[in-house]
Every structure is written in structure tokens, then in C-alpha cells.
Image (tube, rainbow, N blue to C red; front, side, top):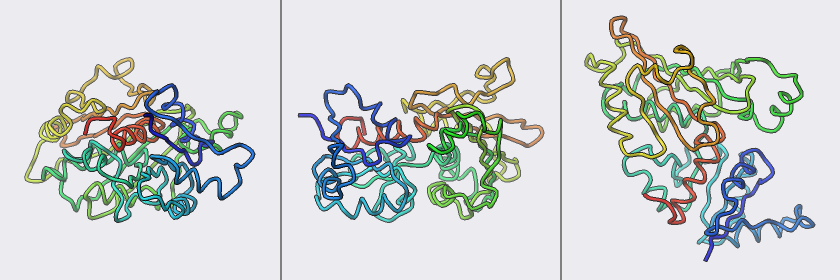
Length: 310
């Protein structure tokens, strides 16, 4: 019998992507509110409670409200908002975060889908802190760029009207909503300095963390950091660790494109290092709508419903 899925907020960017990824699957059935009752609170509550799993693609407050409407103890929830990413009782939905985290996701009834930028950052940093190669009290900086789809419907409309910037730095108040999950799930004592930007392309993302060799524990070399990432993600089908200083992935031998993984649920990790200069650059590449949002939500959904390998 197919599992029943309700997407609350199915008209938004993430909701539409989740729906597309679930289309034509005989093992899943997406249920919907009758169009004539779309604003009927009782009808929405009925859908929230009459399914196997709910995917919340809502603003934070609306996501909290939706969780409060669920009184069926058998309903499982994936929340794509920021509301529960550091909340007690919720499992962070990055299955590759630790060796046994996919099992934790599979056994959870409440999963918070990670942010797109944090997925790249945590993928790079957490294994190094856990391995003792990078101190937990490191004060890190993050430089990242996303396609404009990461800004949701309003930003998409701006760019598709031709009024968007060719490149724009933002988050200049240095209090971006992703910082708490980056710190907590990155095992860091301090919030990183986060410098996000949006470019004039629809989707795709690069997340980079510069490191000085002097910051590493006990004189570790960048090759050891690379080896730790390879060990951590060995055998993970959705994560690829490129060879140290891999230039084969660069366009014209120089440029790392942000959009090479569009339409996939894959994450690529790179370590570029100049050991003589004592400097390194860790970079993650992903689709902000894939592994950074809807693709990861579907990956967690499959685990929670027993359809994926934990």
C-alpha cells in the first residue's frame, strides 16, 4: 500500500520541488486539500492528521502552528523551515552528518530539514572538529553564493523581471538565521562569520571556508583534513570528496561552477591547499534546491518511511 504524503505549503518553491520529486512514484501518494476548501482550517487539520508523513514548506511561525495541529501520534513530520533546526526533540535531517545519523533520521518522527548553506558548511567542518583536527573554539568565516531561487518566490520574481543584481552580498547585519544551526551542528563554540551572496543564475551553490594552517590542531596538515573527509563520507552515495587540489572539476582549469549539480541530490566537497603558504580552502558544491532543500527532504522522507537505506 502506498504511503500518504501531505505537503503543507505545496505552492512555494520548496513545496513544488518536493512534489516534482515525488511524482510518478507508485509507493507514495500525495494528498491535497480540495481547492474549494483551501482556506478551511478544518480541512487543513484533517490532511495534517490523515497521512503517514507531512512535509512543512512554510514560514517559521506557520510551521510551528502546523505542528501544533497534529494530534495523530503516528504522523511523521519533516519541517523545511528554520523553526526546529536546533530544537530539542527534533532530529537534524542531514543523514550523512555522522556514521549513524541516517538511522537516527529513520527512527525519528520529527525531522528538521537543514538549510542549504548549513548543509555545505556542516559537511565540511563537523567531521574535522569531531576528528580533533580543527578546534571547536575556531573562529571561522564562510563565503558562499547561491542562485536566486534560494531567496524564494519574491526574489525569483525580481530576477526573472530582469531587475536583479548580477551579484549581491547580503546578510550584512551578521545575524543570518542559519547561524544557530551552523554553530550547533558544526560542534563549534562560536558562531562563524557568515558572508552569503546571491548571483544572477537560477540555482546552484558554493560554500567556502578559508583556513590558516596555524588554526589546525597539533600542526595538522591539510592532507590530513582531506583524508578525514574521505574517511567520513566513504560509501555515501550522495556525497563525493574530490581528490586534494583537484583541478579536473574546474571550468577552463580555473573556475568552480556553482550549478554543476543542479537537479540532483548530490554534494561535492573540495580541499584546495597551499601547504607552503599554510593556507587552505574548503568548498562544498550543491544544488540549493536539491541537497540544500527538497532533495534532502525526500531523502529523509524515504528513510523515515522505510524506503531508504539507514
